[in-house]
Length: 468
Image (tube, rainbow, N blue to C red):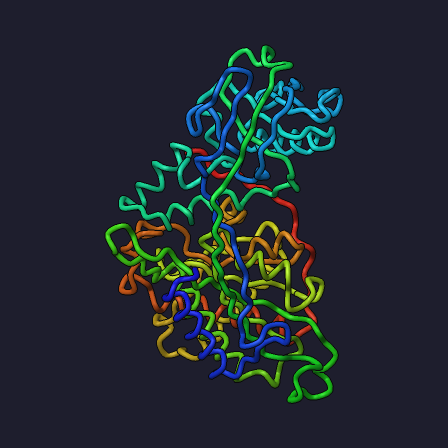
């Protein structure tokens, strides 16, 4: 994202959109929707002391990634677990300190949610800073304290197994993506975590906090093209007019750049396969635009690897209202593993949209058999699987649309041995599989765009990752 290669890829997609007759939406000129992301690094100027004890950055204290910057000095006020406003009685104008977690045994995600609650209550009480105290070295390594310079050991081990030759950019991608999964409250006070025994003994001591970061901004851009339907399409006969609704079809075009030895992450499956299908579907719709009742919006997302940044930018500033968006169909890594299988993520959240896929897939197979009735053995079906629903949350660019209440599906071949490695190269991609998936998605989108079909609001479903 933001690299010369990314710029070239975006320009290529824009040129193809233009060639196929897709139009820029009124909101964004020349097909581009620019957006910015903040990349955050630790700054060695950060400080913490309580009484005579001086804490050491990255060893005995760490700022929270989302902390406000600033320098504060004040009397320490111990607020126990800090989960009730009464715990902060007398903390106004002071620096509050609270215990990590809660009184019960909590999971890591629950502890993160409790941290947000503690911060909100500390701010509500008028505290001018917050110190979250633990006696565990491991506790200060978590999703909310992840920086390129400070990575939880389990994450670092996994990332290094994928990328033996890490670069600063790869570390920035990984850490930014990790933190971006959190739904952060508005925070306007410095917040740090510190390792300390005897937490009650700090009551009344003077605490000094200084939080400083090194931030940089990277600019990405989504490439957005529209094929008009309904009232907007002058080619439409009167019977097809009257709709200002859309269906969104998307795929991300960013990847990981190069490793520390200069080897290219080609991203042939992740996600050139999805972009190739996106462009072919756009070509097919460009030949059927006079039949569309609804418009079709094509989005090539940037910043997916950075934490779905392009999709988040779009749903926060959409070209069309969310309530007018009938469905979102996303493609991410669709060309590997078994040639006759594709996973449909979102089957549990939008079972009616999954049923449409099943029905269209049967019709597709029937049409193929009719066309090849002399040699039915040459016809290959496509199995639609719904067995990895645990990968739906944050899995790709469909997820921000789902969070906005839009029925959303992600088509994926799932994980393979070359995922996020320099060995994800084009000769390993099943081209016929990509074509079959693209045809399926075109048929699904075509039915949505040429009829009045509607889908229920997606269900709130949580499917945990299977235990190893």
